[in-house]
Length: 296
Image 1: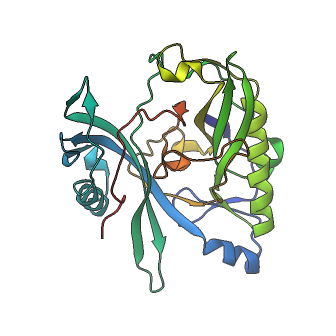
Image 2: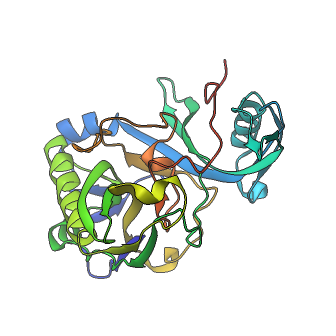
Image 3: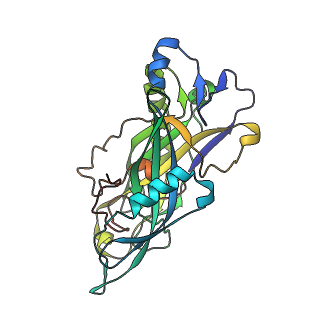
């Protein structure tokens, strides 16, 4: 889900050399410390071909030509070492093709080189027609908070939403907030809270279609994840394709919702989910990865 607003007339917002990162009201000492926390990443998607023994025989990347060669090699070499829990259908081992959404992260090291690694993956397909999934009925996007707009504050909020049996939202929690602008650490905390509160307030007015089939249909409530992006249009960059491009940000801490006692898929990171979907958090709709995300 995108929350986007035009930036015409916005003063004091400057582009950094890093991609898609904005400097807001720089304060030399503390901003320099926050700058050290900056990382760049991209979401890479594709299809993983899984054999009957759980090994991976093939990885097909979406729009591979748009991805840096080094990223393609890292992702493919890692994926071919993965091993999944064998997939059983009607009592028989079967081959399968699973959708993949993977976050690749680059951090600058001393001397100017970069360390590139894999941070979180999702093998979950967004399917609003599946009667075992929670699906959107009404999800009005949040309005851009005025305080954040005036400061040029941009970023992404990764919500965990608790959906009751009537399809209404019982609670919502920001599991992570990544900011795409630089400021003092105190301002980073402040605007993470501003964007999180804004997203949560909007979510509490949403309604969903709840599962009607399968084991999940009898649950007292369902957890779903919804990514929300707060961005500002900047003239010619408006609507530009971002797939295959590095986006720089200051990653916020990952936190757990107070009503949630466990995460059933430790490899799934909230920021590995593509925008525009409603993702089941407690139903394993994809294959289970048994090996580390990135091999030695």
